[in-house]
Amino acid sequence: MSYTNEDLTAVQKAIIELATGKRTVRLMVAKNEYEFSEAKFDSLKLLPADIQ
Image (cartoon, rainbow, N blue to C red; front, side, top):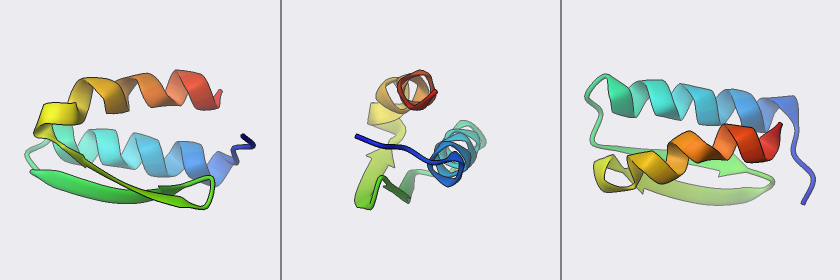
């Protein structure tokens, strides 16, 4: 799967939003839409390493 800098930026923004109180976030990564909630926060935090 090919990632872009925009994908990384979207993931980093979503991490900040969840960390600061937003309950769910939606983002596009590699042309796929994802939704993360507080319960999936740990999975979301691992995604930047996969993209880099």
